[in-house]
Image (tube, rainbow, N blue to C red):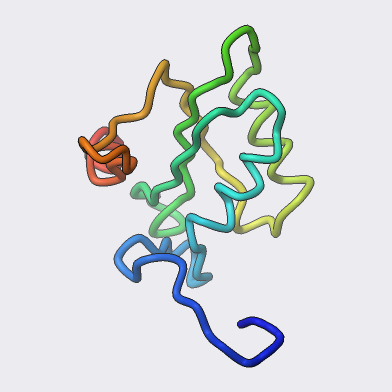
Length: 113
């Protein structure tokens, strides 16, 4: 909600992750990942978790000439957002799957698990 009282929907309901009853919007986690200097692109999805119901998983592509370990990105997020929101799993890919218009295909990433 902005200062004038306007409410903006920034994510789709079906993309919402339900981790132990807590609601996690992928955009919140992606915004944190984008602040890391090595991250070029990020997409966050919910993956099945036997304990939590769903767990947060991040798919990331890196900027050319940079390197980072998945655990480092997870710890980076854990230091900046609530404990139930940070990605328990991070997978680094050369490029994220996209539509012809350039939108990241979360569906493909979700199916990838």
